[in-house]
Amino acid sequence: MSISVLTVLLYALATALATGLGALPFALVRRPARAWLGISNAIAAGLMLAASAGLFREGFAYGVSQVLAGAAFGVGFILLTGRWLKDDHGFRIGKLQGVHARKALLIVGVMTLHSVTEGVGLGVSFGGGVALGVFITVAIAVHNIPEGLAISLVLVPRGESVSRAAAWSVFSSLPQPLLAVPAFLFVETFQPFLPYGLGFAGGAMIWMVIAELVPDALEDAPRISVVISLALSILAMLAFQAVLRGS
Image (cartoon, rainbow, N blue to C red; front, side, top):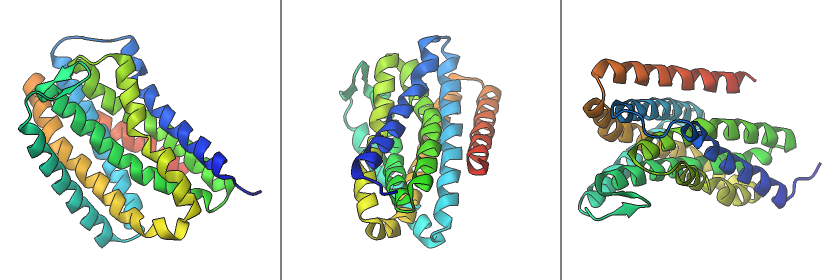
């Protein structure tokens, strides 16, 4: 069965839309106690750490040195971006401004970078046939939901609306449909760059967790609550990834 460009585009677009589902829990719970901001940051940090582990695991199959090089560039990118944003105290994103807007831009930016590699991986997978492409599409779509949750966990407790959090979540996954088609058409060209991209996204997420999310969580919630929330979210995401790999 031949695969059309439109088919690849529609499958990739579905994975991006799935990311918006991560905001749905906040349709029921909007602005609880202040400690929830810290716990939200801890949960988002755990989800991102586990996602980074998955990226490294996938990338190491292509080459360890390429992944580590990409990770180093990812850390450097976040350091430079964070320093640039600190100088602009009037920065705004929707209802958020100042420090909250800076955090929002960093988390959305990091997850968008992550989606670049997923888009390339999706397009490359369709080069191996319809069955493989559909399986990878479903896996990425399901995996995108907790990633949308991680974004919403940072945005909504800081005052952003649920609908805008969902929109930002979908926005962060737009590289998937944008890059899936060229990756499908030029598989041999895109595939060598995958390990660098996986390492870049993983390194950026890990540094974001260490430098931003965990310190913020410890400021707003008791240490024991942060540790438990972080550990449980890591375990839940790792178990989720294991189920996807085994299915």
